Amino acid sequence: MLVHLKELVQAAAQADYAIPAFNVFGYEDAIAVVRAAEAAAAPVILATNLPAVKHMPFRIIAPLLRQVAIDAKVPVVLHLDHGKDYDYVAAAIEHGYTSVMFDGSQLPFEDNVRQTRAIVELAARHGISTEAEIGSVGYSDPSLGLKHEYSDPEEARRFAEETGVDAVAVSIGTVHRMEVQGASIDFDLLAQIEARVKTPLVLHGSTGVADADLRRLAASRIAKVNIGTALRMAFGKTLRAEMEAQPQQFDRIQLFQRPMEAVQQAALHKFHILGLGRNEA
Ligand SMILES: [Zn+2]
Image (cartoon, rainbow, N blue to C red; front, side):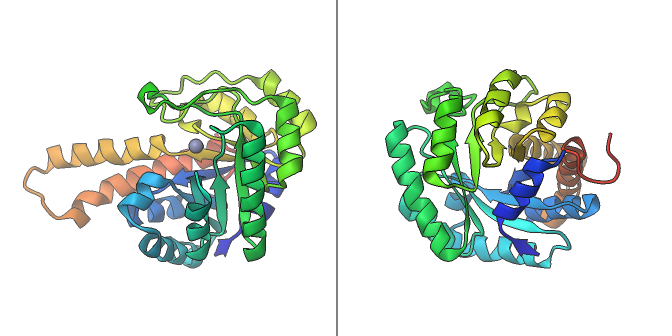
């Protein structure tokens, strides 16, 4: 069933679990993620970033993912990841996303507040949930030229209160697109933020977080955990192995079977680490 983000993150912030938001790029990974969510009997967030939307425009990917969500036996949010301008976010809302992130993390504080508030007002008119970022979660690729800055607890409080977003992404030690679990989480900073911010919190770049830290974060006020690279690596590595194992095979439906299973297993593992599903490790 297709649902909004707000109620899911409010419940998760209070409880000892967090909901994974997986970046998906088409049908194969989306359906694999939903199968994992159904196996865990847990809600899930399907997120699309700018590369996904450049590959498959809103008018095609939104109806596709909406139908995957509607058909699912568990609650599924269709979420826009890192919307950087008003028109882009507005287009996602028009095409049926149930949650949008506005990323003004590269802007000065006052501009970030002002632009985020405009998005919150637009989304509210459509009954859509919102996420925005304070501080800045950097990228493992320095050539992107994006800043990395830890969230300031007092700024985070002001940001949450002045914008009225439903979820606040914070920077506490993760970095986007890490291929190994090497992030060093600043739990003291998280505690300071938790003491001031009532809004549910979001962690980006979570592929880089060790399982033990992820479990601890799931029990905190972190309610949504973004995971992209881990699934893309599962898909890509398995597809490469399949092509090497079956050099004569050219049928993509056949070649995609094991990579889809690998994505499903990788996603299911994350559910368990985040405190969801029956077979908790
Ligand atoms: Zn992110």
